[in-house]
Length: 638
Image 1: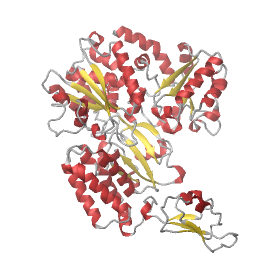
Image 2: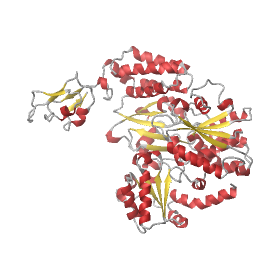
Image 3: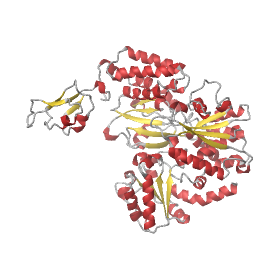
Image 4: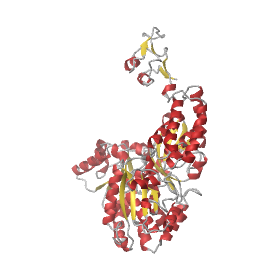
C-alpha cells in the first residue's frame, strides 16, 4: 500500500461517508455523485443484533430485489448509540431515523420510502425526530445527540464496520500515514500525545503520553504494545462498541504507539464473550495485513509492526494491567506487585505499554487535527471527551460521548431524557464495582477525573448507572460486593477474605440482623482493604460501600435500627398486607400464591359481596406475586 493508493481509496469513499454525516446543504448533491439514490444504514452492533437486526437487513435486501431497486446501498454499521430503540435503521440523505425495526417494518419502508418518489414513513420514525407540527428533523438535532461530541465514536454508526475501504475513507490510517511519511520522529509523536493532555480512559486517568515516554526510555530491543479490551464492569459496553463499529482505529493507534516506543508487536486482549467484536477484529487485522498497513515495511517507511488477538475467559481481574499481561503469557490471570511498572518490565518481562480501547480511539484525531485542537476540549486537567454507557433508571439507555466537564444533569435530564415513570433522580453510580455513587445534590457537578474523585466517586472506564428513588443503596453496595467477591483472584488475603467479610456484613444488614457496630466494622475493614490489597480490584472493591455509607448513611441506619428498607427492596424487611376495605374477594391473589399463604377472612367490606382475603406473615415468602396480580391495588408492601 502506498500513499497514492490510500488517497485513491479515500476519494472513492469520501462522498458516500459525507452523505452519512448529514451535511444538510450538500447531502442531495453528494447523493447524486455517489451513484446511490439512498443509503440505508442498519446497526450491526451486539445490542441491535440481539434484537434481530440481521433479519431486518435480510428483509431489506429481499424486498429491494423483488422491487427491482438497485440504487439503494445497504450498510451494516456499528452502534448508533441509542440502544434502547434498537434495531435502528437510518436512511440517507434524509437522515430518517427508524427505531425498533422489525422485518415487516423494513418491508414497509422499502415500499413506501425507498421506492423512487417515496416518502418517509413517519409512524416508524424515532419519536424524538418528529415535531408537534409533523415535520421531521435529522436525528443529530434531537436532545440525545445534539449535546454529544463524537471523537472516539466518530465512525461508529457511520461506516461499514467490516470494510477497510470505508474506514480509510472516514479517516482511519491518515494519522499513521502522517507519522510514517512526513518525517515525524518517535519523540514528535509522544510530544503530541503529551501536549494533547489525553489521560487513560481505562479508569486510572494516567497521562497517556507519559506512559509512552517511560516505555520509550526503557532499555531493550524487544518492546510490546497492548490493548485492554477486557471490559468487565457490569453495564459497560463502550469498548465493545468501538471494536464493533471501528476496529481499524485501534489497529492504527497501536501501530503509531509501536513506532513511538520502538515496538514491533502488539496484542489485543479481548474477552471471548464479545463474539461480534472478536470477529470484526479478526477481519480488520486480516484486511490491514493485506493492505500492508500491518506487517513488514508499512507504507514503505521501513517500520514493521503486527498485532495478534488474545481471548480472555471473562475474569474481571484481567482488566488490571499486570493480570492481563500474565494471562497473555499463558498463565492464570493474577496481578503482580508494582514496581516495576509495565513500562519498564511488562509483557514477557519486556517494556510494555497498555491502553484501553477508548484511549486508542483518541489517537488518530490527536495526530491528524493536532494536540492544540484536542486540548481545547474538556476541562483544565481532563482534556477531550468521555464515552459513557448510560443505563439504569433512564429513558434513553445507550452510548453517549460528551466533552469532559459536561454536568451530570445534562447527561441525565437532556441526553438521557430523564427518569421514567415520573420517579425522582436519587444518584448515579460511576466507575462500576470500583467506583462510587453521586447523590442528587451533586447533579450539577461537571464530570471529569478530578471532580468525581473529589465527591467520592471515580470515572472508571465509563459505566454510568442512573438510580431512582426505588433503589436501596445498601442493596446496591451488596450487589457490587457480590460481584467483586466472586471475581477476586484470591492471590492476596485482604481482597480474598476482605470482600467476603464485607459481603457478610452487608447481607446481615439487608436481612434485618444488622447491629450498630457493624458500620464501624465496615469502615475499618474497607480502609484496610484499600491500603493493603495487591491490585486495583481489591483496593477499589470497598469504594461503592464507602461511598454509599458516606452519602446515604441514614439508609444503613434505617435498616439496622428500624428494620426498614425505605425503597422496598430488601425482602427480609418487607411485609405484604391486604387492605380489607379495598379487597373485593376475587381470590386472584390466593390462587397465584406459590406457598398458599393467603386465605379468605370473614370480613365483607361495605359495597362488596365477597369476604376479603388476608396474608399469613409466617408463611409469606415475600415474592410479590399477590401484588402483581391484584387489579384493585388492595395488596400493600410496607
